[in-house]
Length: 199
Image (tube, rainbow, N blue to C red; front, side, top):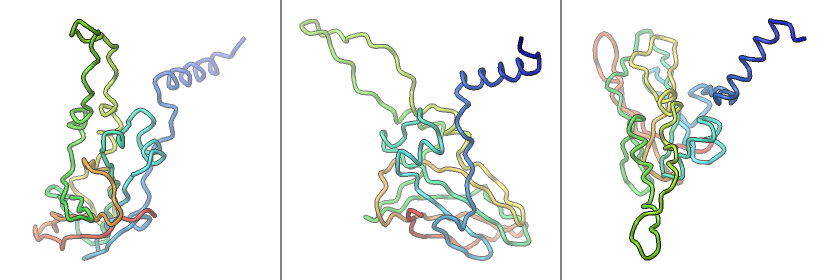
């Protein structure tokens, strides 16, 4: 007979496995662990998650981002200043090696990018063959939960999260970041622009 306490633990474990929570939680590294730039005592690091292994590590197997040409970029901001940094007007853009500028897609809009092709038709009838509905792979809660969401960054603190770009990763891609402001003055901190390299 299984002791009551052990039974409860086993029940919770199996319930978590059934709910799909068996994957390891994602933790971002420090800003300096990635390609980064420092200016005015703020450090910004970034890494494109441009392989299947990386996207699985961050979001699990269900969110098939690269198939739909969605490039997640992890951004980590560290505030080494003595005052809080205001991130409410933060702007992050992908600058391609070919000069293209791509703005991020809000995570709640990602499901609209997973547009499936039209179903095949029954020969000679013109009617579509009924197919079972598939869950939208860009509608996973991890995509919203792990998006960059910080609005204020206290002294000595770091914030991290993903920005999602409708783009294919290319060598020489750069990240352009601006809109950071000092508090309480409201003065804008110098913009950041640096090449994102696999590191």
